[in-house]
Length: 281
Image (cartoon, rainbow, N blue to C red; front, side, top):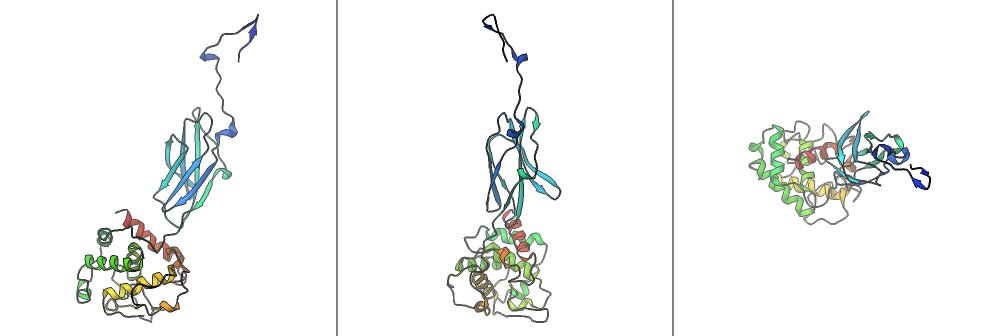
């Protein structure tokens, strides 16, 4: 502020300046756009903001991605698909972080993990995930059935998935969940080459049997395609339960909850957690 005295404005220097930012303008309004295992956040610039902090709610607190975002956008990565998240962006103005309330929280749900599509995982990542589990591959059982090593097994997984347009990482992870890393132990025996528990509707029903590893995995792929797509099969149908599925009812892994497994609470998430571990190897 200056004063006009005797026709002249008063002089001023830095000590005469007063800085202030309106309280309402210090609270960024955030938009969130979900994508595969990520969320893109954008907000309007806050007047006088030096930088921004971005955080996600975890339990009763917050986990901060960054305290030093210099722009008005940030992409949070490393998230889980099919999961609800709450994000918060704060502005640092004059050494003070903006206040916030529940109305400033951006809520968003990431899309589910698609069953159909090009594979994101390599054969090497699948084998690495199996070795990391610490389990022994049952070579004595699967050598005469067309897969002498886990590398052979994963090669077949990759080929059979590609034949029907199913993601290989989904097929492999589901097989590991269903079989306990190929150790079995339930009503289905390893010799059945039934890696998806097809037809095993109870602890006393062993389900379908297949002549070798490839046909067993092919049947599982076809059953996944039945749930996830309305497209016709490319190979002859070997899935004995294909006709019982309402086509296209479960396009994502999370949609298999209560369908492939009953009641199936958390079933899809148990598969996607392995997918995420694999893709991060």
